[in-house]
Image (tube, rainbow, N blue to C red):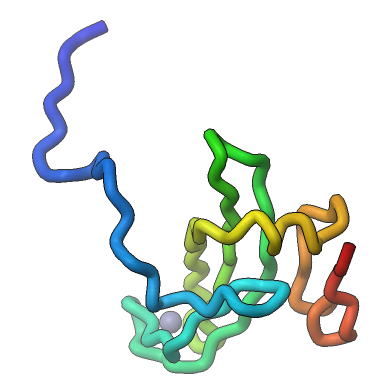
Length: 107
Ligand SMILES: [Zn+2]
């Protein structure tokens, strides 16, 4: 394999304190409104929460958010507390319609 030298700090060994995400409830959501980087739209839809497997003692949820103005989709990989994963009761995906219909899983 050829050598690759990637400039910058793309593999930090620390995590800065997360104030962007609210992790108090059953599902993570942004504490702040988001401005779309493409169209500067401010209305977004959380399409889905996708909880992944445990990784070296850490737990993650990919939160997929769609801009309602230009349709740009962003995925945020959010580290979440183990309790949040346990409360999912084995389910790994919650969709917007699950949430809106009140079908948020608890263990
Ligand atoms: Zn947009």
